[in-house]
Image (cartoon, rainbow, N blue to C red; front, side, top):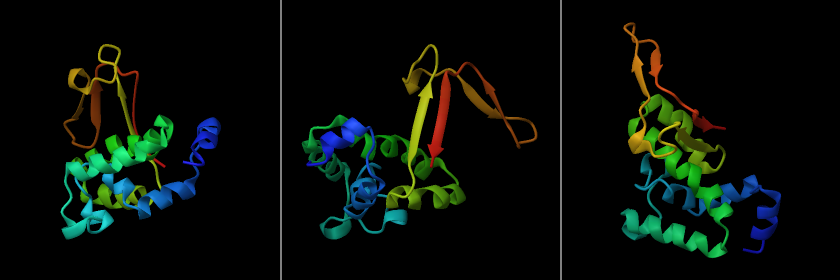
Length: 150
């Protein structure tokens, strides 16, 4: 809490803080299901993690009274990494998840369309593999769509 105002004003959270959050289990908590494959056993008695544990973790993080800090720590990770963990190839998961969960990399998911905004249930755009199976053909309008891991 002593740093939140300065970080909000600077519009930047120090990278070292992400590492501290990773060590405390906060980054893994942002993923919904505990990502044991990449983060090790859940940091709770008995190692059984559920949504309630995640809610408690995020609620405790919110005590700092800074939406910017909370969103900066768990927001992008919480919507960007779960699709990789659930639908990404093994190779993609291995390349992305460990760095994100260690606080070394950042990930986000940004989806928007002219008619749906960020309401993913109403997106119209599709991406279908071409007959060769090597490329995707994107049909529809996008304002932008980014899955980014730095």
